[in-house]
Image 1 (cartoon, one colour):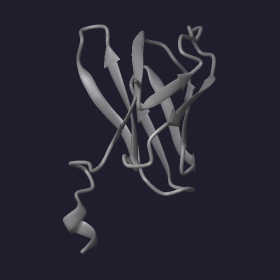
Image 2 (image 1 turned 90 degrees about the vertical axis):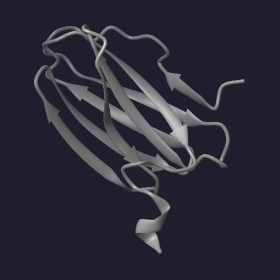
Image 3 (image 1 turned 60 degrees about the vertical axis):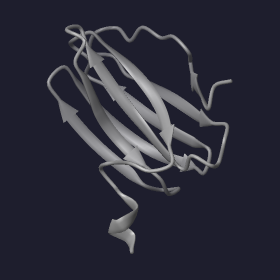
Image 4 (image 1 turned 120 degrees about the vertical axis):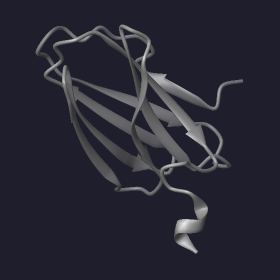
Length: 106
């Protein structure tokens, strides 16, 4: 079974338009939620990894602008705007992250 569910599952964002994607966490044992992008060359890049409700991150990259928000314990949203280059977006969950290892909080 899947640990996360993306809504909508598939979406095509027209050039220079905006869309908000949602990611729903199905297992609270994996508190970190992340968004990744994969460009047309297959390069994978982390956009944001958020754990706590209310956490936000703004990411401006060539070809698109993003705003990630941890809406609740079980939801992560990604607002995508100013899209000018094709890409695929993925939502994931994990128990920890390399960007925010547990030892930083000790």
